Length: 473
Image (cartoon, rainbow, N blue to C red):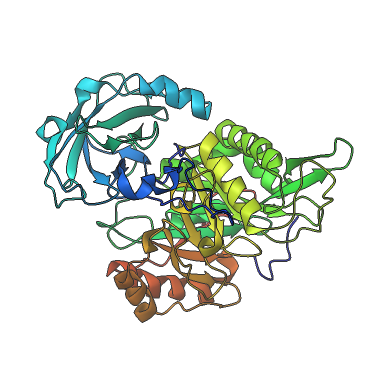
């Protein structure tokens, strides 16, 4: 992050079905030769696509907090069909094995008999309809569900109508279901803005997030980001690896005392990944390097029971381009790393702090997959708002980023309210510090009123660094 000098958290094989592929013409015209019509198929074919309506993704994580959960899916065509189109949406149990093989996961099947699709999944699109109405999919909890385990609901769309085509992946979407029924309900209202708190863990205990409650008893902060682990270069093995300073490692070594209480309260715990003044960097890995580092991050998140990663492209030196792990510093390289991370841990969060070569609106389509599918959300540098990239919406963007220690960024009630009305999905805070509550808490209180129309209770207790003792302020 800008000026943070104290360094010491398919999927998506989705092809974009409606793209018209263009090719260049030969300078010489060969009369009588066969014409390749492939470039025009995108304009003539009816390409089908199945997505979760609320996330606009073909891979969505579902937190089951009651006995039943409902979401809406949408089947759409690349253009008006000019004829009636029959569509069938159903559970495809066989796709579970395919999905797990692609993503190197081992998700168990959510029983098909506990999945209900409206109208039995049978629909007819009129000649002037490009998509179905919202199709309600209801999941019912089953006996024996294990908290913390991820279950897969593989859905598929098919059509007997002549001319409707699918790729293997555009015909499928998955819901990844987690049983959260015994966790605290942190719901702050339909479509409520998500508050993301970056902790400078060299200075502050992340347990302090538990002390910020609204008047109705909901936790004010939703995501806790540990700032920061480092992407490092090993000059002996000539490869990239993940490195923790003693403050990050202390929290991980004492995970059950310092991090899991946050998760048990319903918060997400994410690890920030930051450069560390060498040639490794979030936006300068080769395709191979990105794939290998993503696998390491996925193993790391699962081993420590973390909810994902947050990339921050800064504090890296120029890479040695002769090394196969590294590439030119670019938006493409940063996009590739995020894509590879989402591919190997689709149940985890992959987020972004806009900086360096990695900005939400500069992320690129990777292997046919839009950034909106592999970037869960992005927050801006201090004082700014993130902009949606390709396939993203404002719901995946931070409306404001506030540096609490220095006072950067608007913390006014009116700004918070206007960002909520505009449709932004996230708000970001950095450097919460109990020793500075006198100048920090009122800013959070202003934002709370603007985002949720209720008061934030002034905290009465705090946790000192590396201590689980709850002390009175």
